[in-house]
Image 1 (tube, rainbow, N blue to C red):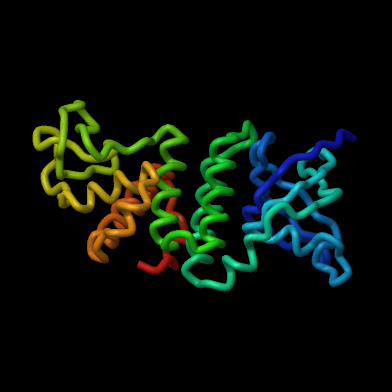
Image 2: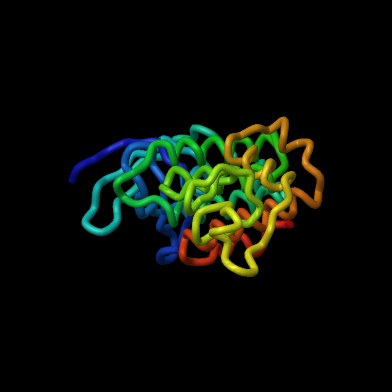
Length: 240
């Protein structure tokens, strides 16, 4: 049976039988992997605590027919404890791993892996607000998946901005000629904040007013839900 080793982020876990778990991993080189971790629910398990959501591990696996089998797991970064200790960080991280789960498949994506690891590290260290970290992650991950939003030129016809109408289905802001009737309008501060979140301009995001942050979060949520095609259950629990 082939054996392989990789770095991975634990996305989610499910109980299997009395002592085992099915672990969903986003790996650095092999994409998304589902594997059985035997005996990890026993108190004597050597690596059960390392295979919890938000943990980054060096994992060795046996390749199985339907599910792989975890043979070894060594901790690389223990972000789980710091994240779960703060409700805002926990809900943001939950939305991140759920998004990564939906966006990635077996072919793998190193940029998606690195983006998720960086976002979880930032959350665990409290480098920025949890809401802003989540919004930035969502915009970037969708961009990597081929759904980069436009917050300057018209997403439909390319007319130079600035524009204020936002249409998630089209891919961002649109000019007045392309805007469907009743399209929501964004003020310049919100558009500026969305652009900063997309590019990682944290100095700009730190200065945004609370109302601007709330409007930007609503836009990011709408854009994410539309392009994923299915709702993110975790977003329901994220603090506004």
